[in-house]
Length: 395
Image (tube, rainbow, N blue to C red; front, top):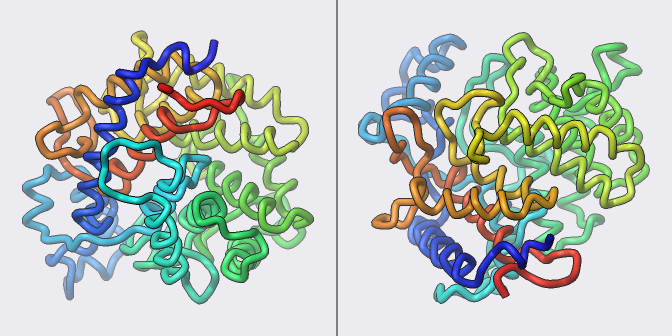
């Protein structure tokens, strides 16, 4: 079965119309907006003792992360431009760059937008060669300063610059990023022993997170094919797969959860590596895909935020599900998820996607990176991703 047989022209046009409205919202706000993790930039944090202690930073951040929209409004957090937002629009994660979007009636020229996004991303690169989130944030495992380079943002930006920015791997900015991954984040097993062989999230922190290691291994291999890290890192991630096919988030005790979108990250990366000729991945992909289908979707085929749990449905998980289902050939299910996304999760009046849906109804908060950019990315895959036969959806 091909995707063209399950996505009708009418379905594709509905998705294009939704994408056009969300795109216009992003343009009107100059790609700046709120994020679930920006709570430390509230006006109440400036000069406050909240910022002086790990526990108070973590508690405040989690409170704002889960707070309703009105509370966030009172917190007066300034809108920010996130490099990951721009990277997703350039087709990071094997998406469709804005320059390759099919016509949707939107008054923009994607071929001109992509170079502008590329210039913005290059201007946002840190002196150490990486990119980071524009806000400071506290995790249980570490604290990151505003703008501090990290593995995930750096990898997404490099992926977008290679894909939609049309920048070659030997470009000085990308080679600086490779140096950051290699020197700043690689935890060398020859130095650290059994606790090495992976990539850290930020410099100076040693939390091992499996999707982070796989992302960094993939990007470093794209930039420097003969690097000594990627093979060790990939083998380590493969070795962390459970007997049931799943990967937990990471190695710390509090990282023992399994969520839908990070599971999708790992499957997509393994698939991309396999397509690029990396050997020995099929068994892990097959087992991981079977677990993903079994545990990360409910009985109706709709995504779950966390494996085996029908609770709050995060729109981020929905977006990733569209892409992973599409990549692995579950086209009818991918279509059903996409059409579901533009019904209860889309605000037709405001032209934005809700943050999610829970047992108390729709979560009407609007997050520019976490929800809008991811949904635009996913919808673009659904309607504009080139298929193996060279065709596009809904044509």
